[in-house]
Length: 346
Ligand code: ADP
Image 1 (cartoon, rainbow, N blue to C red):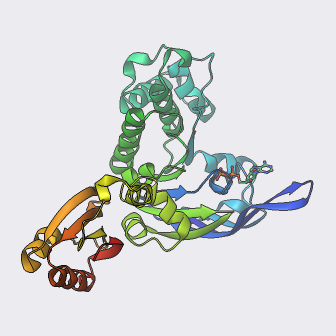
Image 2 (cartoon, protein in one colour):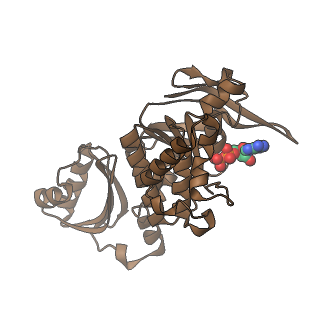
Image 3 (cartoon, rainbow, N blue to C red):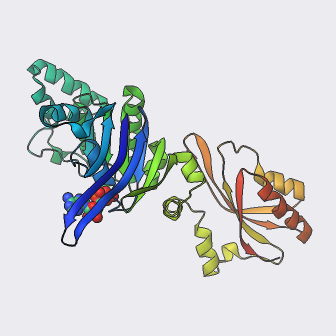
């Protein structure tokens, strides 16, 4: 649906040209939810604005649904923009217009009759579950409701792509969840291709099929969300992942000398991370039974990402020395888990 090829976007600054986007090539498939994650300033917004030509790339090509949009100007470009909706962090609603008028705004230019516009607005408000707010003004709505209005407005012209620029960053976790559920539902029901840019890993986990990680204008890693989560190849990606996992907290507890992770002689503190989506064997109980050792779980953090469990556990292994040694020798042979010894009192 979207093919970005060698996209460069430079801004002229006092010190010369600055590359906000530096040679990005990405393909986004029809009907997928694609995430672009990175810290503030990484170039995510600039890249996404190149898709609907809110920004014109300095070089490179953007193809949407097979058309080279970088070649379009004037009326053709305006028509193309109708097939790409966009929503923003701060909603960007017109404060002096009602909810219905906000949603109707993009329809006014299409030459539809009053009745056709009213019918479409009614349909859109039902889609985002705000039928009862048609006559309200934006200031009378919660943040989540404002974003629903923005979504309805973005979908008014029946776009095939929806760009979401930090769409949940101004919302609390519960509201974030409800907006993400709505986006997922629209993706499934309408076949809408969605591009989500965010600095929050939980957003990627919750709705994205594939993800690209951006740093200083470049895409440093990309792939199916599960694969990137289970086997991050870049330090920045590991940072994002650990920001939502308690499994890395154990290193702080060890450094602080916390009694939670204090080992008795002969014990070993290990972290086990799931590596593959087909993990279904009972690793903990099987090593406990096979090697006759105790496995005391300190943390467990297992979530479902892309319909497969991901995460792991931090545990203390205890038993006689030879049995603990045998368990530690056995664990790495299982290619479904990655084993790290965090502290060793053998
Ligand atoms: P992100 O969305 O990842 O936070 P942006 O795409 O907004 O990043 O910005 C990337 C870089 O480009 C930043 O350093 C930002 O200051 C710079 N930038 C963005 N827009 C402009 C502009 N219109 N003029 C000059 N510099 C800009």
